Length: 313
Image 1 (cartoon, rainbow, N blue to C red):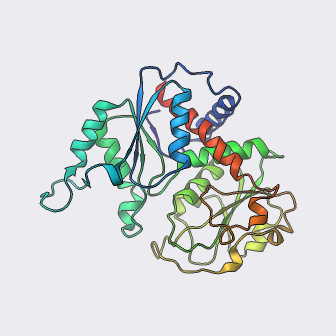
Image 2 (cartoon, rainbow, N blue to C red):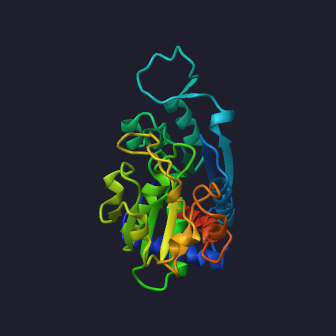
Image 3 (spheres, rainbow, N blue to C red):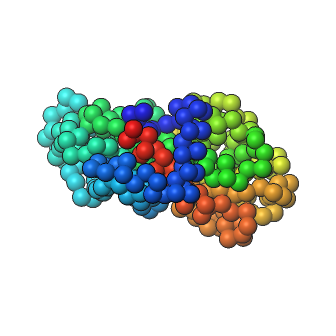
């Protein structure tokens, strides 16, 4: 495996989940695997869990990690080929990525979408430019369309807490004050379907996700109906995909609270964090026994460790 940027197949996913659970039991079991290796963590956008968990994961494997907040500490990059660079961008991706390729053994990149150029975002243009011009193995720390480290941690969390082989997993849209990217929702759908879960996606009309990620899931616009008998409920906002990047609805009734889970008495609730309390999710759920959000956050370490270990083989 050279790139960890998306769901590949169930066999690999099962292997990564198993490896992550092994690392959770013995975090330093492969502490020499990355000795003498260096990973560059490049952030074009803010991060808390992704940055720290990936650094800890690399350390557990004996790797050196170096973080560069490219949005604040580096030159503005020109991503397009063949341009005359007489405007504000000081360095071309070909040159910058080539340098990074000589400094590191693995690159990891966070690059959010613009939410203004649907075609460019849908192609994961920035991620692919770094991959192409660095020549290195690459890990997505969240791209324009996917967040595979988060999704692997989510699958690990479900595996730890499921009571049946094929749990009912519901991805529900929630309100938010901002236009939010689709990456977490896309990836969670892609991985949940790929791992064989019974997946229902519920959202107001107009919030359909890209069908590349939802094929195989049930789509339900009635949230109460979707939540009935759920084993896991994943709460996430996203902006419109077809009317790209727009906020079409701010219906507060879509916020998940305890009352809404009356028909799902055993449901566990998940969220990737950060969460807008009492906008997306109620305090009573986040701080109650249903919540798996802290389990998910802890599992980010071991998911990243499993992914990095695959690239080191």
